[in-house]
Image: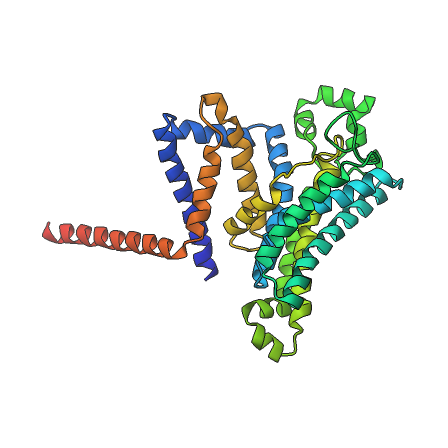
Length: 375
């Protein structure tokens, strides 16, 4: 089953690229040239690789959030709202508290993740206690989180009156890699003499990629190797059987949505503390929560699979932004990703395609054998 899922994912990616090629041809663009631009735009230079990794970090965590909930029988459509409240929590701690370096960043990360946990747990409580469908309630929580962010940015203590952003976080809360050193005189002098390191470190490279990879491994371990994971998956497979086995269904639902929210909130916190901290946060949706659903689907809801899936998605979107250099639209990448997800969501169609190719290969082999016999 796992092998088939992997093959279906690969087939869906190939079909997405092939159909994307047709669309590019119709628009008058050479698909080989376009894909070359996308690939080189994402991985062609050290700074491009750094930017791709930076953009992949929140996608790994929001993808994990969606995949974790799905593995426990729940649909977490609220990763965007959980991401937003996580970024709010990290901003408040990173801006208003005065703590020592390292400790400040860790506390801000934890608070942001816990804000996401609370946002997800509310959805779990609504489902467990009042039988509110988690899809509807999590969508509503997205909008509540978004407008809550807008409302909080109306307070002078948070909003920079000279812009539409909040104030930047304190430097002690930053989780950027060598952040202070890069802006010091010695750091600038060293990087000026080493272009390779300068290209790698100039993007906002942060410790988020390490946190995201560790989170993916931990979630995989929890789901596959622990009693908690067994209970949550059992509830997802069959609630009645799980309840008969002595598992508290309501608690499991709240735990599952809370953990999913924790992961998405952590993504928001990492973005604030590691990427956008110099300008704070804006009153806008960044879309990482929604993109996380695409990443989870490409990964087949496998926690470890979210890492390569997020890198693929980030590479396509970041590299695709450079398609304008050859006179075509970067939106083509969104079409390609959409086609991939469409095929992943239709396993029966992929079964038919697989059956067709198997039948065709057998027919070709039969024709070759007949030709040899006639000779």
